[in-house]
Image (tube, rainbow, N blue to C red; front, side, top):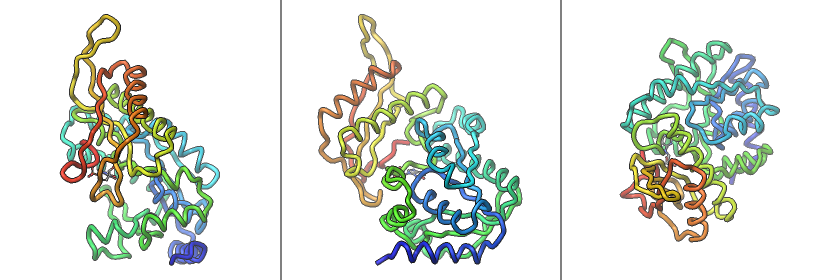
Length: 308
Ligand code: XMP
């Protein structure tokens, strides 16, 4: 059984010894793993830890402000709006893997620039046990990361032995807000994996608003803790609709809500019908570009959780 206060003490001592008075950097996404790692590292080395929130333009509604508000008093936080750089590189790209590759590359470039500016020698990462056990079981705990333009950072992974439930326990002990600790997972490439086909600023806005409505209504219903993820996908399909007396040709949005333990498999549970209807009505009323909302009922496998 994990004793969270012992774990925190040992982790802080370990990082103090490893990093000393050098500078470290961490990419803070606002998810529970990077949040817990950031707060632990900051307790160890104070302002020598620089936490960087990179806004790739595909984050949730109000996310940059939310991360700033939550962490500005806890961390030495830098927020970088790199959305133009990301969106320029993504223009016209439809292939899901190509989107991920581009986002990964631009992210590393932006991150390397910040790391150089702050003179970081260490990179703190929120790797947890399943990340390395399931992927490449023999990955060394001590290793370096060479960035594309030559910067080499030594990796520090304070929560690499923990599982998600333990990360949450440590997060609570550190006094992080429940909202951070129990947040649904949000993919690194963000809304890019929820927009089918080419990404445009208009489509990002539609997808962002639809996702915000889903989050609000699921929380209003009080079932957020029973779902692994709940979100909206903007498809590349146009559907005829009618608004007033005028026929319209708008987007099809798909609602996706799944239960899962580890995202390896997932299933769609029975969902409260009035909530689904309320989400559908709000999306078509509040987002004029959408004419049709449907509900995904496919489990994983054979479907994946995300659409793109
Ligand atoms: P799929 O869609 O493969 O997703 O069933 C499984 C889990 O992983 C998340 N996901 C990602 N997370 N980068 C991430 O950081 C990605 O490229 C990515 N693709 C999917 C997804 O939200 C789900 O929790």
